[in-house]
Image 1: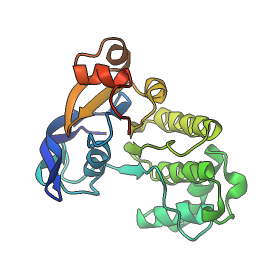
Image 2: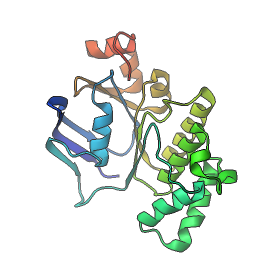
Image 3: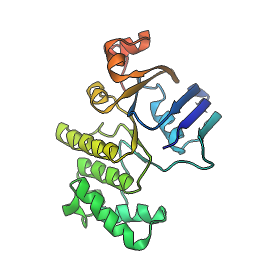
Image 4: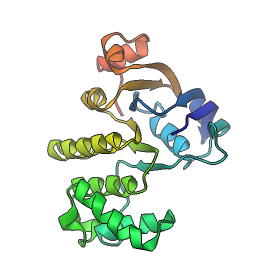
Length: 233
C-alpha cells in the first residue's frame, strides 16, 4: 500500500462542520485505530478515505499513483445481497473483474478461512449477525485489498462473535492488508491497534502508538476520553 494522504480536508453537512481541516498520512504498516467521542467525525473520515464521500474542501490522494489503491470497507451493519453466502462473495469478485473460473474458488477459500464453509449455499440474509459480519469480512478479504477500512465492526455483536471477528481481522492483517478501523471499545483498540488517531470536534488532536496513548495521553481531551468523561461512539 502506498501512503494515503489527506490534505486540509473539511466536510460540511446541513451547515455543520463535521471535519475541520484534517491533514494526515496513512501508510502501510501499523494497524490504525480511530478513537473519539460521539460526533467527532470518525465515520465520515473513514468514508472520505474510502472514497464514498467527497470532502467539501481539501484533497485526498494516493501518493505515487494516478488512481486509488486497492481497498475495501466493512460497516457496522453490513449489507447482504439477496443471494447465498458464496454468491455474495462471487458477485463482488465479478464487479472487481476477477476471471469467472477463479471467483468461486476464491470465494470458497475465504469462506473456509472465516469458518463459514458450511454456510456457502445458505441465504446470506438468514445468517446470524456475527455470521453476516464474518461474511462481510470474507467478501472484502477476497478482493485482496491493500487497505481495509472497518467502521465499528463489532458494535452489535456478543462477546463470542466479537472474538471471532477480531480473529479474522488478525488473519487479514497477517495476509499483508493494512487495517484502519474505528471502535468504541478501548480494550479492542489496545488489542487490535498499533497506533491511535484521536479525534475531537472534527479534528485529529492526537496521534500516538497505542501503549503511549493509553499510558500518557498528551491532550486533555484524550485523557478525559480514556477516563470515560467524554461520550463514546
